[in-house]
Image (cartoon, rainbow, N blue to C red; front, side, top):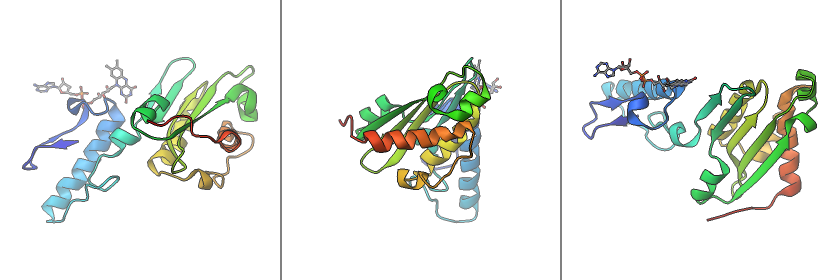
Length: 186
Ligand SMILES: Cc1cc2nc3c(=O)[nH]c(=O)nc-3n(C[C@H](O)[C@H](O)[C@H](O)COP(=O)(O)OP(=O)(O)OC[C@H]3O[C@@H](n4cnc5c(N)ncnc54)[C@H](O)[C@@H]3O)c2cc1C
């Protein structure tokens, strides 16, 4: 979302070149509506990060689904983007087909991968990528964790049901715990 300096014009959707996806355009429209309503009511705008009138998710937590076979989905920063942004980054990879019982139940010979990108200094998620059959339905859990800046320590208390593919979160947390070292920092 981008308003011109005197605040009367809002550019929403692809035209602002921020995140060229239908759901991000709709998100920008919701935020713009809130800002316009607040202005009309004479209220101050909250444009701080994650504030009611800032489209922070456009740069920090954009979810995207590639409807290919198998599906590929991602939210937030890739490891490369996180490194380039100066974060201390820990990358955790899990083989969905091997490590997750729910994946084996979902389909014989299930093949898929999960990658978690952690801000190692603050212990929060910067990004997540899943590849595999049905993973688009896993994406919103990762979006909530990234947009909510949920501490990894608290994710241990978000218990996934047995036997679902969501148990990949346990494998990711275990691998992070057992291999925790910062791998890169600018
Ligand atoms: C092949 C393809 C697949 C996609 N798949 C997905 C997907 O699965 N999920 C997803 O989230 N996003 C997807 N996208 C992206 C998504 O389509 C766009 O992000 C979204 O449509 C942007 O919405 P918008 O309203 O900003 O722009 P648009 O949908 O492009 O709407 C702009 C409208 O303005 C009209 N217009 C342009 N100039 C003028 C003018 N001078 N006067 C009047 N009207 C004008 C255009 O005709 C158009 O109708 C896909 C894009 C493509 C090309």
